[in-house]
Length: 288
Length: 288
Image (cartoon, rainbow over the protein chains, first blue to last red):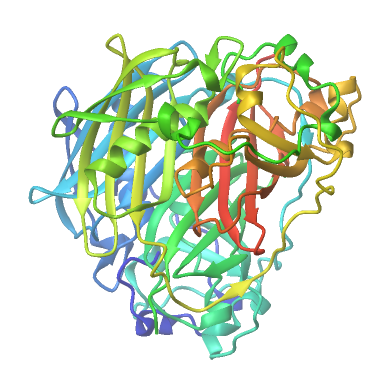
């Protein structure tokens, strides 16, 4: 949630701890599905449309655009779950028509791997490399050293305001107040953001939507450098399980900011206490 | 260091705390450079050769094979440093001739991005997606929450034995004894491996060789499940700085093993105390 995002665009984030946590309205066509629909034009070539509903300012969220590319890959491959997805963001996408070109590298028994390129107006915006598998039938030994992040209670709902950026209307979030004090101009020095998230229209999260959720929290580095522009160069998400709840809890941290780069490590957990995704992105921090 | 590696291949690891830490012999042609040499055949197409010197058993190390692909990408692009590299391992490579096909996605002012496919006998083995930049001129704010791992002293050197796997001859490693007790059949339950590493022939590490170092330590999950086969599906390395010392210290950890997958997170630091690489891989853990 950061390509080309200027500081002023984050001004909406004034009352983060009271972000809407109300019940979702009933609906039949979910926004995420409508806005990531892909249609095969010929084998390996898909037509889609980048919606303006997932933007901050004029720039569509990177995780959202990635979700379109992965929707095309899912049509091209038999394995249902994206288990490891890497996107390199070349240029900001724009609302409007898009084309996805999928190149299958391998179709195996347990996994399939492919690349995808998302183009608009003949210009490549995002390049993706991903391996798909089947998480429903996954088995094996278990050893877990980690637990879901501490998050606030989901009380004090507040509906989104029409003045807020488009993407903010798509989610309900309850972020831990102490992790978003940058919104009041305070730098806590702790580059961590924690909280709840779900789709505002009640869509249940699945593996593909975790690519969006992994890029939907505000950058934790805002607690160190203040609100600014930290464009994502690369985002990798490991989908570890299919989410089993509507609400997800997430934590995002930056440990190493130096030399013009930072990493942002994320975890997403469902309400069953299952880690559903690990994410890491590399972002650039322009000199200021 | 694990594609197709059977348990018996790790038997060499009997005296890990005494792994050779002797002075490197002087040499002019370094093995890593010789064994990752690529020759342009035509624009975007490179010829190379996978050496048998970086194998365990019959299987070349994944990070080594990736280094060949990235050598071709470096020839194709003007930016010198691989800042974010992701490889998906489709099939084990084999010692012998190889071809690398590079497809440039973007050449920008600060970064360039490309894909590469490494083929042998017409069959794709590894697919790579990487962004390159220039770490020498990197600047920006600094905020660091992390420190180099605790590692043993580099005393008690022992030369590699001729009976050890080929790749073991290429490095000198001093691993913390308490992190490799699986070598004596003990499962400590702590999925962490820490220690020193350098090239045995004195080659200084650079950004590209960090891709190899990030895959050269034994899997920390051996401390949980014992020695076994944990094939890497995907490896991502963020090169954060050019290494400024011959020896590097590394730490590799697995926090989440379940559902047939594990992640392995790594850090590599140089002797100046600079984090030079962050790595993460997704590996499969076959049912047993």
